[in-house]
Image (cartoon, rainbow, N blue to C red; front, top):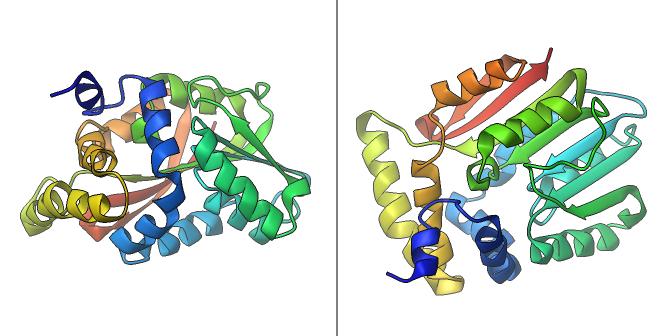
Length: 242
């Protein structure tokens, strides 16, 4: 196994993860729709529905990828004054910017190359923050959650959409088989096999649902709502900073 392959078994080096997403950025949206049977669109729409109305508010989407969540948030909540999308991958942000230009809203969004571990926003300056399918790619997740707690205003909403490993029943076996056997093969047909082999490994090394709840509470968040998809393989968590 190469050094790079060993690094990709879990997020240990942010530059390696960023380079991987740079390489797959051109096919990222297509494969998301294909591999999830377009369920990712429904999950993101539910996240958008949990964004609070806030005139003049500031919205931050971390690990924004190609910008789907941020651009949908702008459409649903034009009353916000600031929309910031950040990612560690310049390639992904390039596609996000193209979408904003095509939609004629590039003047309303700001894209930043930025790590979740070091958010370039002032303390208590953000009204709502989100991260979709990106927290598991962060090297130091505890530091990232602390950063979200820092930049959110008291009462600010924090939304997490992420994959988890089901631990019991037939769904667990089906999830493991699909993620470890089927998904990498489909990914290799259209993109990079290593990247789509990394996905199940990153999920396996991620928090359990109870661990994430405990960490959020320790950082000063109150969990208001959780929605499970695919029998717990994907979860949407809404929390609020105290």
